[in-house]
Length: 273
Image (tube, rainbow, N blue to C red; front, side, top):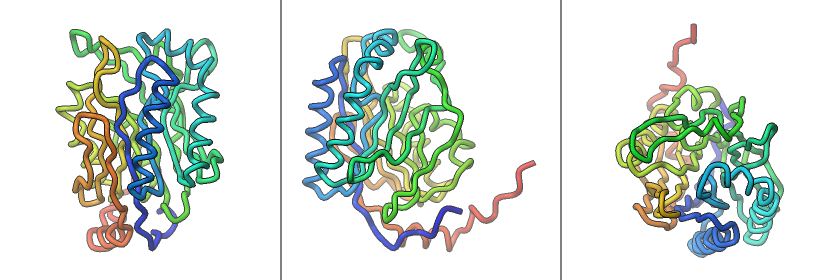
């Protein structure tokens, strides 16, 4: 089990935003929503997968990462420090052999990097029409499940988008909160997004905080939206809907402790093998 459950109820935010193929425009959009979340009392703010840009093509995204990753990371650090909040968000970071890592970076209220996670499950799917994706062609997968001790915010587990479909990822480490920044397609999002997030919350008896890309990024790419915060009973505490916005809620860790005490499913798991 992770460290003892904090006796706090931090107010956290999951942002739904519409990133575009321009870095500075995307960062301006992110800044606007972060400021809104801070005004509403958020102590921690999550941005979605690929928050610095949604490129026109995968090749353009790889090329941009080599030029823009440092700028995006510096912005994340500076913004967290300026507002005095924990922040996290997903971006492409250059890897070997002309590829990138789809990376989730967490920074503390001083702007210091706490940890980073590299997406393990890559989105190689063929759904027909325009929904043909081969993420492995330009992304190098990560190997490790990562958690972060965020003090009064609890222990957080990290996942990115397609990882959500793999319950074994979430069972590999235990956490009080899981965050799943994403850029879900509209087709799969409408069918599966809410169901999967609620399932991961219920079966792991944890809060789930899921920032999301939302709306039309460019002529050939649209995302589902619906940044969500879900409690360990599977109740949706906040939902931005299909457009950009801020989902904000308190993580009542006393409720988390009550759920785990009254229904001790995590303790009842059978040994693997």
